Image (cartoon, rainbow, N blue to C red):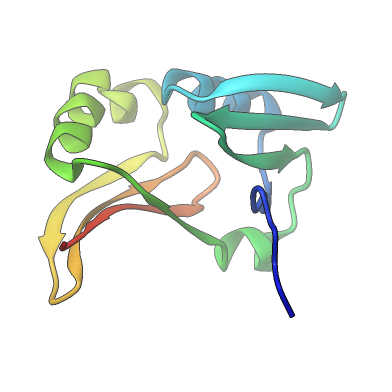
Amino acid sequence: MEHKGRSIRPFIGARDFALSRSFYRDLGFQESTLTSAMSYFNSDGLGFYLQDADVKDWIDNTMVFMEVEDVTRFWNELVALDLPSKYEDVRLTPIRTYDWGRECFVHDPSGILWHFGEFFK
């Protein structure tokens, strides 16, 4: 089977939809409102759907990995945003190095875990 895909767009939930929308805009994603209960967020052609859906088991088990060009630059810009002071439940975890590459972590206001990483070349 030959895939000629153009994107993969996961769906993620939100405990507080308005708060999560604000968080992702502050994180640098561009929002397109689709309905009163769903928005599409994108950055340079990569994106995801955010839903006004507070489903605990789903949210608590959601992780998203986004490859970035330079994780050190990304981390420095992320820290400068000071998101944990604006969003109570947001947590940042500094860069860790693994045998495959490096990544940092962000827990969004709902607790969804984002991995922002860079693969070794």
